[in-house]
Image 1: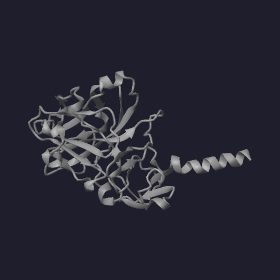
Image 2: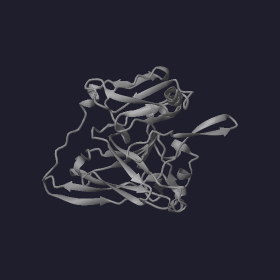
Image 3: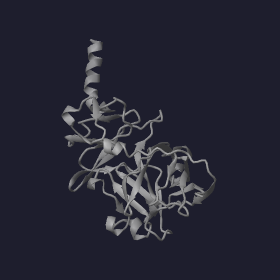
Image 4: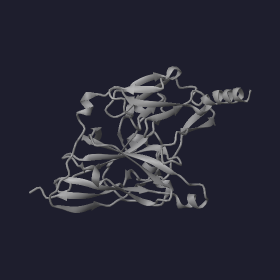
Length: 320
């Protein structure tokens, strides 16, 4: 009787906790880490490093279809009432052929640095959410072969917030690289995406060493983006938690995206417009320059804080 009762409790708990699903390559059955799971309504989530994600129809009763995608693979549409335990994505050969394999250069080089710009004003910060991605264009130094050694990522850990004892977590981010398509982030640059975490005790500037990744800037420049994947769990993996909260309004219950920490300080001290943003679950993933054309009501834009001051250190090689 006790075993039957335990089984029934487990059975009825499954819809609440959600079921685990795994995303695989259809050719070699290898896992596809950090794939994008769009709900088709402006919301979504990500798989973890093991290609797994959790979905519950009870939590998302208004979602009937998932759109699953990853770089180099064709998007797959899956009905939520018939999600297979293993979801297989087909590689797109045309995209896979674009993967860049760069050999490390051994010639003479000089170290150059592009300073990052950070501040502690939380009211002049971008609120990172799972549907947001921020991209900055980097150009070659002196039109010479330029390798990015590290990225200098401005952050605001909200010291006042931490003193209240409310923050004790880490957020997992992903760095993506894009070609320059007439001033906008275009196709994937073919470099490996980089996943890392920033703990809430970090502040001002987080330096990410990518010297072993052999990331070289193209002649037309290279867009580097920062994208939120979600919170890190106690095991250092992407936590499969609900990324949205419900707020009662006059129009009914609205789903509002969770803001993650640390915040991203935007600056008003850069003359050029070099920052582009997009919401990957909305507007067909379209990139837009961060100005009034994106959102005229944004307080950041109204106060001139329209750029993200990401910096970097470079190896600039002597091409002679």
